[in-house]
Image (tube, rainbow, N blue to C red):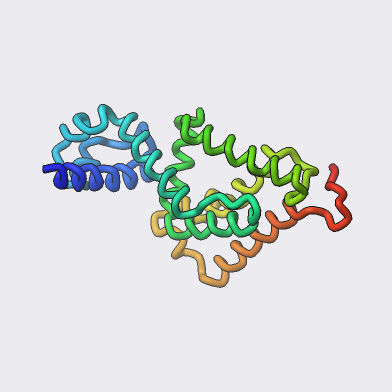
Length: 200
């Protein structure tokens, strides 16, 4: 019975992910999620409470999967940015989910806030140790790294804009975009050879 329950929950979360990524929180329909998961709609309320709480569960799982797939590496922020880019190439619907979340629920969750503050602290320590250029505040550095990693996926014509995702991009275009992201992050974060920091 427990195995069946876990399988049903997994199907519901998968179906809900697709539904929320396509329609957002307000536009998502519980009956469509249940139909896609081949589950009784009542189970959504049993397992997750309501549609908002189901979205929370979907978002939490997406964040955990992202953290596991792309561990934060403060000593290789260009490589980390490239890995985030790759993660989104493989999961273009994830960026659509993130965009809906920012639009409909811009306040960070506790998980998001804790993760972000931890990364900022790591960047600040690396700056103090001279491993990352200290010309920008650590918060700005992290925001720019994440923004550059995700930029192509929220751009007009990017994967998040369509249903077919990154397959719309020729391989050489993907390579070019990824290289631009990695190089941009390298330029922002690389310490100056003479020990000086960049200034405005």
